[in-house]
Each structure stands twice: as C-alpha cells, then as structure tokens.
Amino acid sequence: MRIALGADHAAAAFKQELLTYVRSLGHTAVDYGVPLGATASDYPVSAEITARAVASGDCDLGLVCCGTGQGVMLAANKVRGIRCAVCTDCYSAAMARQHNDANMLALGARVLGIELAKLLVSTFLSTPFEGGRHAVRVGMITDIERRESAGEVTGA
Image 1 (cartoon, one colour):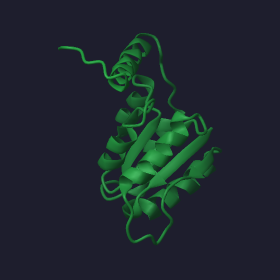
Image 2 (cartoon, rainbow, N blue to C red; image 1 turned 180 degrees about the horizontal axis):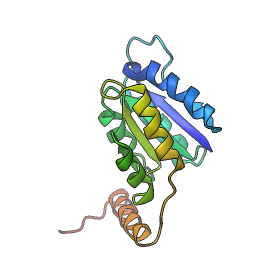
Image 3 (cartoon, rainbow, N blue to C red; image 1 turned 120 degrees about the horizontal axis):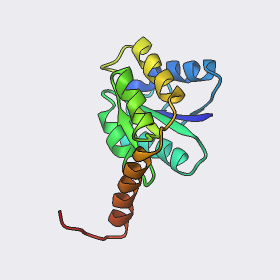
C-alpha cells in the first residue's frame, strides 16, 4: 500500500521514525510533512495536504501527527472523503478500520511513546474494513458529508 504521512513541527521526528517503520512493513511511505528541524509549522496545512493525497486516491491510507493528534484529526476530517480517527490504544485503531472504514490515523507525538505508536500503525494498516452493517453506517456518514457540501440542512 501507499501510505501518506504528514506532521507539524511538534511531530517531525516522530513522523520520521514512523516513515521508516511503515517502509519496514513493506509499504511505500510518502512524506507530506514538515522536515526535521522545522521550528514552526501549522498543523492544518500538513493535515490537509496529507488528507488530499488519500482522498484523491494517490495514497491508500494516511497517518498524521501533531502534539496530541487532535488538531491534525480535526483538520484532516474537513477534507471530503476522509475519515480520520485519533487513537491511543490498539483496540480503537482496529475498530476505526474494521467498523468505521477510517482511512487516516492521527497520532500525538507528545502523548504516545514511539513503540506504542508503531503498534497502533501496524494494527491500523493490517486491519481490513468489515463491511456489512458497518458499510451502511459509513454510507450514512458519507451522506451527511454530501448534504453538508450541498448546503442541505435537515432537522433533528
């Protein structure tokens, strides 16, 4: 698989280690993040660039990193077609793929050790989407996205 990786300055070194790890798993890792040594960058920029690589189909899945993972997750999810989950445990990473068909994983360099991050990445990349009843729910999420972009408003 082609895996897109992006990060802000707070997670540049973390992302470098994950690039090497993703390659060791036999995947092609594409770097969309800031270079090592960057003193400042805006996490929404790297998250959007990485998410667009996934949404366009240029990459199969994506990994985005910042201090907590929250900021890049929020920014990535603004790109149509992206389902990005921030995870701190392997069960959540597996369920994000298996039940939610998440196509991006967000990680926090300031809240996770690199070895746990590698376990999360491995779990995320190796877990397939289960489909079935979950496909119906993912379709409902896609419908929300479609209605939002079309400016359609529905009541609760």
